[in-house]
Length: 407
Image 1 (cartoon, rainbow, N blue to C red):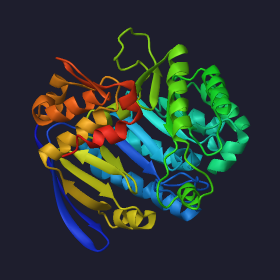
Image 2 (image 1 turned 180 degrees about the vertical axis):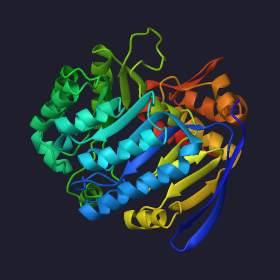
Image 3 (image 1 turned 90 degrees about the vertical axis):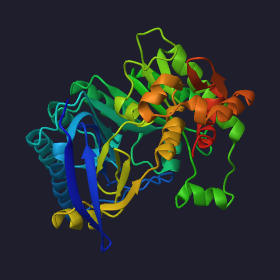
Image 4 (image 1 turned 60 degrees about the vertical axis):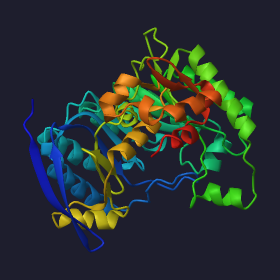
């Protein structure tokens, strides 16, 4: 059993200091790294990202290495996820610096190490470097294979780049590739969605992530919707989701979360598939994780921390020897359990009662008994002696259902 470790540090952001003490009984096994750079901002994106310039990227990479160094003693990562933004926009020199730091700090060798890529920023040299550096999994943001829809979303890649980049990744030795798709895009028709699914599955990825377009405030798509330039077609979105589940299932993909499908050799209806993203499963099951990079969030031992959403401020804080934490929140145990319930119900398996007790210390039958019964009466949930899960209808509206479990 690892010994009890106490790490205390000062964090400074926007001229205010907060003293945080994290008591780590065991090393944290999941690490998220946020790379905030994108060639251009997609019309639907609300994540923190912006265009790069050479000096800022250099400063960011150096600051990221400093933050990793500060946290290295608290980490023994089994899953690592580089997201953004567009991590693949970093050049070879930047990636060499990051990979060398990970090796020197003993943070390499994770069982699953994912890097998000844009098809426009994948090269043979970069793919080879990442694979040899220990990256095991690539998540490529395809979104659509229709040129008009790619333009509608503000994507910088073409459909031809998708196929070329996919071949580059396979030739570099990547055996685990996820392809991201979007549906219910304004002006997208069912035939176009069906053709995108057909072409994507024909590429034979190990995993699919398929998300319905969400209209976030302060994004171009939201402003266009508010201006009446198009209407949300909810019935068509539901039909597209049902078509996704049907086609993916017929082609050997096992849905294990609302938007995620992995290839699977097992027989259990609610098994986590062999090719599931284990990093994301840790989120949905309420596990601890550390986050580095601007805007990144971490959760360890009941304390949630969020880094400043400003790359300049992030770099400045790390250059002065401080973490760039902007928010610290110590969650009430019942509040955190409610969040874990909501996130976990996004998974097809839902929550076995014993697993929920082990994760939170609370029993769903005691604190959320009436909530579960209500979801059953509405056709959103299935309740039995072993646990509670959502129906196919409930999964379609998992965010709304999950909100009923928040405390």
